[in-house]
Length: 493
Image (cartoon, rainbow, N blue to C red; front, top):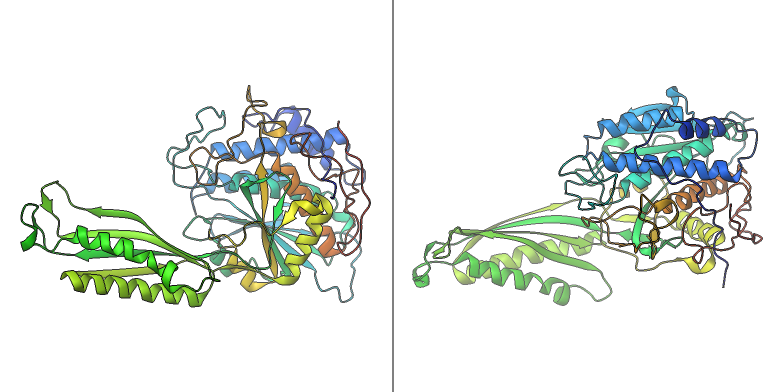
């Protein structure tokens, strides 16, 4: 069995509210601004403490898709004041998004190195829902909007990467670039295509992204080639009958009864029309009709979603939905209008880049901590469109822990049981102990893809925070993933 990654333990409880002009923020900004020396353990710990405070600041001020104006401004401030990225290297993209280019200042490499620009993406938007984490000091201050999917943590991870890459720009050849995307509106209506239309993928050789996943243990990764997340669609079925008195159904055409038959029949699409090797879901999620108990209504409206992993399966489901609705309505003397609106494409990972992520993950996290897991899943992601423009991979990183500990602690919440509820739950909260894992993995991935040596294993071990019994030991990530690495002992500061 492979050894798990090393852990360091946070010496400071992350502050909230974040004080961008305070002593700790200023000290971290000063320490990371000097790239010609190694960071000390406490300095790295302080960096991750500040990143956690940034994550919580974003969490407290959530904004929905294409309305991320405060988030946009805050990211710009942190990128320049903490990461020391030149203002000229940051540009607005797709209204509220950002594209950040960190170009090396070292001697140009030249030659035929095939990967010269790697892009890494974080999503920005929050969900239009109410947070019920009443005990969190950093809970949403924007009523009806909340970061219940972890995009706040994804952004904090990317800020951390910007810090660590910018300070080593002198070690990066001037013909190599690390491009960071902060993408709006992933939850809808979709920000990837507007980002692409605004030029974010120009010159990109490879593109990568991750999503936190609360059911996967902290320090673990799920990755697969090919489809990893699904293609969603939404449907609306308006069934029209003939209303009347509830005591006289024989002179009415009851759309409620028709709708009930439709709901049941739609469930046969997956069980009877889909090949067992395929994967799909049909879910009816709302039923609206009627006003009072003694009146049969004129119409009932059903809405729901389908999920699939291929265009052929979607085409079959669309045809079957229309056929089933039409047939049942004809049988009862009703009629119907059916609308089906397809959404994001399947997230389809490229084989080579998925293999790189998988093998690197095994090296820096441990052989037994990287797997296919339950992939593919039928959640949706518009990261898919980036993969249409350049090869790359999307993967899941775990955040599951038994207790609230390390960077995730706040106030009196230490060593308490962690809920680990799924994304989009009203009690979800991103696990801050995942931030160091994500940041460190991004650094190692860039080193591998661009053939760089930026940080030693001693300076930047994989994983800071988390339960001591869960994390111990680690592999040296300083070699390419095709080669073996030596083990390092865990250390605590």
